[in-house]
Image 1 (cartoon, rainbow, N blue to C red):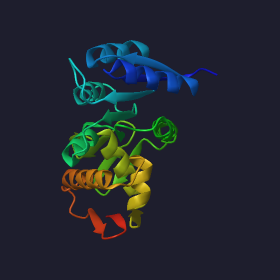
Image 2: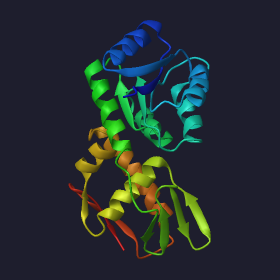
Image 3: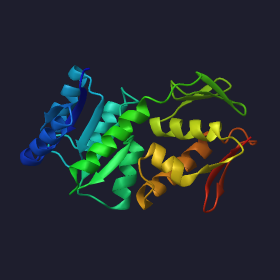
Image 4: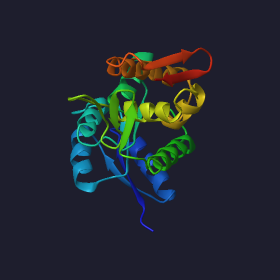
Length: 225
């Protein structure tokens, strides 16, 4: 059985080596890169299964690197490592397309759990190509929302959130459950990020007045149409 390849971008040599060696003891294959430029070239050549990116790196920071990769790959899981903990930084990371966010210092056990959760999650999404949402047509695999002759691209997280809302149409989608499923945690920062994505989906669905995403306070959200 082949090992899962992880691309690790970390500019602190000692920390990078510790993470690499720890992951390799868990039977991962780790590509350690010292800056964002090297990481991007390595990503294109090696096709890793998951990315673990330090945010503050020389030459190209983790957020910029993630944007470039998301432009060509909608589905690869991304975990950000950072000492930055302000809400706006966390939200920015999720908006770019990050799947998880780990604040330094962290335990290796926590990182490994989050890596495995994201890898397991990416194997689950098998569904029909086309889903009707009111007068919209939602192509989930391609992450595109169609209205008549117009199309709107969706981000990776917007697509998965809309998919789960549709699958629970007219039912309350439990806030904690979906946060843990899509973000890996239901803490304050991820809850704020989810609110941002709900607002974005409402705007993208506004051409059909029959569609509503209702905030059920204290419980979650309900898609009605």
